[in-house]
Length: 210
Length: 375
Image (cartoon, rainbow over all chains, first blue to last red; front, side, top):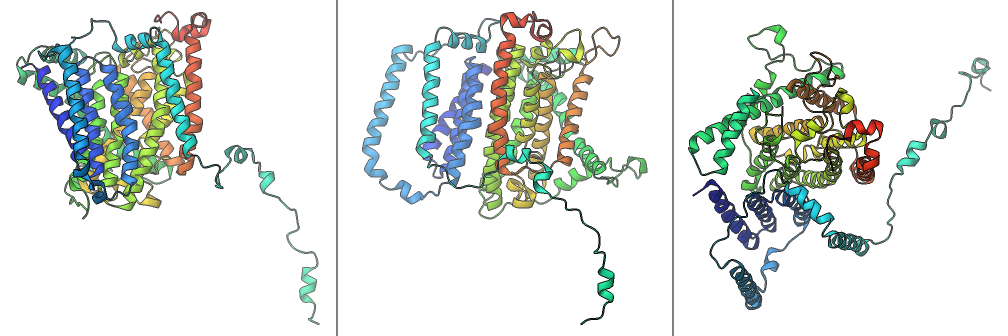
């Protein structure tokens, strides 16, 4: 067995295990952390396929940003575990049917393509060819329109998310930094010139009380 | 030294690519290579915190640690302090709070330390002195640093403590926000370099005029934003609301003691060093000399220039810590989202314009980008 194969089987085993634990873990935070592990091992598998740009972007975007925010939300939710498990047996038949259908579909697809004879690794790119550069070239020339359309769809989703949750301006005490910077000492502090003591104070004190 | 590393490197890579070969030998070589980068980093972390305490002491007209010496020699006052601290931390008791999630609680320090150390595999110290000279090393650095935040989040959640949890949430939001600004600043740098490889990015800054050829001149806003975002991402002053001693006592670190606590500490300092290494490599010419090439001895490139730049930037970290009050949380978010991200986006467009064909051949711009690499 080559080192390559050993790495592949290790990553694949960890990926399957963590994928399974995502749906079986009782605590949602544990499930989310197993999902992070699944992403990391998937990135490892992609690196074995010489897709280093995709692998590193997977870690950067999904592990580094998306799952952090996901955990953020999951940790703050007040989840009732008993309620979560209610109706498990009732929904099982439908869910199982869908799962079997999906597995069958994926199996058929793979079989039609590869015939279960084992997949041959595409092999490394020829020396001097950068994965990242090629991907960028294809995205910005041959697939420019779909790429830009995907960007617009993402932008619309972002605006929609803000529009749906925005409840108008609340009365918050926010600071206006520009106004703070513009302030001069004359606006805040008024210096009044006056004598240190009243001129006839000494006389008044000396005078007898009436 | 550099040649030794290269031979080790090539030997290791051929073993990885082909079949197992003599695995013990390959493993031994890999371990030696890793140690040659890791040990200096660890020793640096150990001694830098002494230097930091000294410098902050001097800035506040105190003496800093000056008691623990080697063999009672007065002139070495304070030099043994890091060793004494390390021994103290090693023999301290580990306390796992009741109700804490024990596995995750003990896993969190490891999760924060492993990416902080693993990144050093792709950081070049000279053109030859690098454990793995991979194609997309900037991406590897970004990917690894983005994983470091899990240590803090898991620590905060697993501690089963309110303060730790609040600190974890603050840290998560802050790191994600500043990662965007950091990423955009690095995008500008790699556009200028035309490569994702750190060694080549330094080579692109080479030229007869020394310091004026480096990318900090055309990319000045990006350089500053990258460094400040680095301060924020490592949760250092003035962005350390995640720890915030005065409000949430030490955030995610409240429940940790002894060795587990010091692992977080180690990760923080290794990450700081990484931020300075990135700034030095991408914007300050790495191992290139700041003096013109024609000068006899000073114009030579070498690892000492890189180390000097990193040390100088580390000192900036310390000065910032000793000088500025902590930001309020909404101020941190405002700075990240409303100031840094727009500036970086605008400057990426400016860099793109500078790289365009007619502009690129203009006299001064020609210095940085001209004729060194073709689109």
